Image (cartoon, rainbow over all chains, first blue to last red; front, side, top):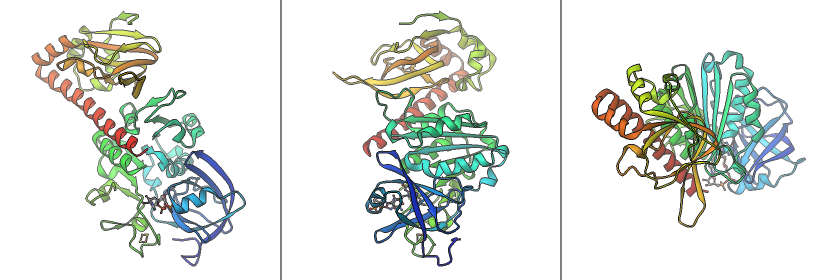
Amino acid sequence: MANNQNIYKPIKAKLTDVIEESPLIKTFVLIPEEEFSFKTGQFIELSVDGIGEAPFTPSSSPHVTDKLEVTIMKTGYVTEYMHNLKPGGYMGIRGPYGRGYPVETFFGKEVLILGGGCGLAPIRSLLYALEHVKDKLKKVILCYGSKTPSDCIYKPLFARLNQIEKFEAYRTVDKADEEWDGSVGVATTLLNTIKVDIKNSVAVVCGPPIMMKFGTIRIIEMGYTDDQIYLSMEKNMSCGLGKCGHCMMGEFFVCKDGPVFTYKELKNTPDIWK
Amino acid sequence: MKTESNKVIIEDLKKIRFFEGYSDKQLTAIVEMSSVKEFKVKEILFEQYDELHDVDILLEGSLSLGISLAHEKRIHLGTIEEGQLFSWSAVFSPYISTAWVMAMKPAKVISINAKQLNKKIEEDCDFGFKTMSKIAQTISHRLSDTRFQLMNQMTI
Ligand SMILES: Cc1cc2nc3c(=O)[nH]c(=O)nc-3n(C[C@H](O)[C@H](O)[C@H](O)COP(=O)(O)OP(=O)(O)OC[C@H]3O[C@@H](n4cnc5c(N)ncnc54)[C@H](O)[C@@H]3O)c2cc1C
Ligand code: FES
């Protein structure tokens, strides 16, 4: 449920920093003027006065409540405008909306996370949330792929994660450049070599539709059951409240019933990867 | 150029996921047809279109796999990590490699003689089924990853 009273009225938030993550992706650091909290995996509607609004999943820790980070890829009208904003400006926040990751159900288990491209934004928030409860988890493995080394966002995150007890982070690129000496291949190739106790594990997949499709198929092949797999779905949205029907996917409103679903919930829905 | 050659021990094979489910007797048979080879950084293990005599599994290090197009530099398509099987073309006619492989880090490779492996596959049904299933799975993953990579490149 929204933190603010009028569900359509955004909270004002001051833009305090803009971090350039890759040529097309920036992270916006916002200080909401009213109390604001979210659960990892939930999304918000972020707006710019007179331009429009769009849904985004916060990329910051749900345990940090005085500041919010949103990582945005420039894809069209609203996001292009957002990319031109400078610190000191204001944005509007509605939400949070939807169902996030059921982190408590991951307790006692290994968590395998497969991510690609801008999908690392919601995953970063999840990683912060998992770090917060790491004593209750067996292991967290991140496998992340980007198209090129310069498309990889949050570069320092990988070294940091590999220093945290129980965390392992791997990354690969589809296409290397002269300086890249890491793994080459799509994100799923990283699954060939990791060691995971599949029976006592959950898998989280988040990224572009192509990656979600190939990634989920490979994870099923590894032996995960449909209810062990969590998918973070992106569908065109408008109200974010289960009222307009823009985000319908089969019987589900992605904005209200998701955006996080188990594969078991979605597997019979037509065109889930579109 | 191969710089060193020595014997494979059964413990090496037990660490590799490919050999999960093999009996000690079957692993011993593999040991008898294998050797460990070492490669220096940037050393080419084999070129595209080379005739292959061994199926290889990377024990340590990291390898790059790619193709060369006429008059063009080498194109890196993927990385082979520890525990992964490559040079599977050695067990299928015409036994010609479809890609080149180069060491990115100092590499130790288990090389299994393909002729002897094929003989064992024909003679021992259980061994043959396991081995062919696992090679098929490796090729299936490579194909699926390549499709995924191709679709990604098409959307760059
Ligand atoms: C729950 C949810 C969470 C999201 N989280 C993030 C995030 O953390 N970071 C991020 O960069 N993006 C995220 N997105 C996608 C983001 O909402 C769209 O990129 C944005 O709405 C595009 O707006 P635009 O006006 O710039 O593009 P438009 O000019 O409207 O469209 C440009 C292109 O983007 C596509 N698009 C438009 N809206 C959406 C949408 N809602 N979902 C998917 N594709 C869309 C269009 O089909 C078109 O191809 C999320 C989407 C959803 C539904
Ligand atoms: S966005 Fe309006 S119903 Fe989901």
